Length: 85
Image (cartoon, rainbow, N blue to C red; front, side, top):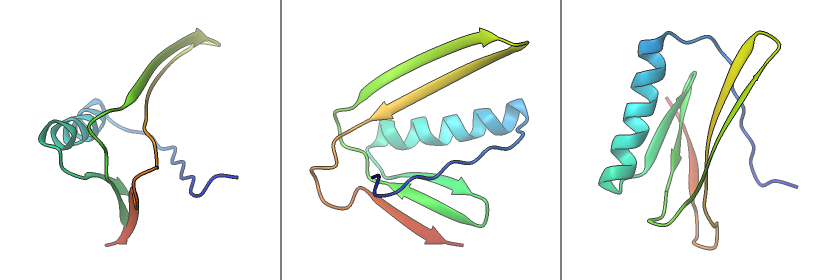
């Protein structure tokens, strides 16, 4: 069983997708908590210096799917916080 799972599916413009990725990249580069907007709230993730990454591309059924996955150990305390707006 997972401690927390959040999944959000919605339509985005290219600019909205770029803004989300840019904000995440800037937080990772600065060593700050990564904050993701989740509709009415935000998810704040404490990301360690060492990560595992995976990029997956699937082409089929008239669509292209690009997944960028980052993983890290939860051995350090409190790696996530859900904040209300």
